[in-house]
Picture 1 (tube, rainbow, N blue to C red):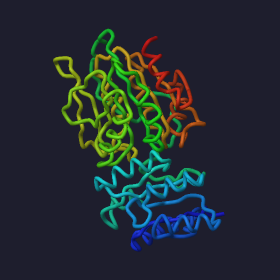
Picture 2 (cartoon, rainbow, N blue to C red):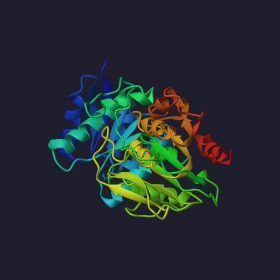
Picture 3 (cartoon, rainbow, N blue to C red):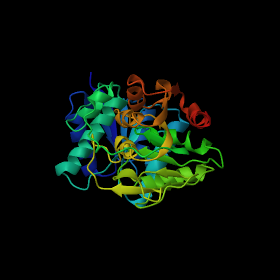
Length: 361
């Protein structure tokens, strides 16, 4: 039986575009559409049943954020996917929507054809499949990240071989990788790093350009440590939580002085991901960190596992993975667990404490 989707958007064109994409999938059907959140709530309170909801942010009468608040107030539990533009106001509201329980968001395409539109179509269908409990929607672009990751010898990633730098005693780095469900999950991780935490933290959250600044601002408001979006050429400093820029690849380069400099660059996506945690981890191979402490949080696919396997060849690495019960999507943590790179698997609320304890060990 086809899974029923409710589409909410005040633009008749976008309702038609989104509906055509959903109806092109033989496992999904658009059961209803609505022009705003108030219109959609009328349908829901009349007893209409849906397997997933796709909602715009900017709408009259009741916008996407207000709609999510209304769902929470009425304790209506239906997976919600936000469709958002990159306007600054929409970006802030999108992050708020994710914090209110939206499963994920898809950036509206600026064109109606070509690679950008194809990416929108693939992301929307992939996320709806997960939301509706269907078998993962497969695209050529992300097949690499759907294969089980087992042995490092099977990696297809090629990294230039360099003599590893000798480890500098006591130099540590914390890295957190997350994807679908990550923005909300990070609210249960980032604020619980203790004040005065001595090491830098880098978060690689899968997001398009224009949204990570809003995510950093929201987390900074909640955290005792400063949280900021990474700037190209910025020097890594202890006691700061950095969020890799959306729509860029983030790498860390060690300079002759020993300092670490961020490179926010335009290297191509890997498995459709930009930023990609594997690429960030690969950049750590030629660094002198004595120890790298990692957390793998909720998300589709297997990003992070191959990179962790790679740095484990030459460095001391400890890994905590979020457990299945508390994940929105048990993909990335499962891949790390199946590849046997994890030291601990814990509920979301225990991730920060586990990371801190790992550093003390």
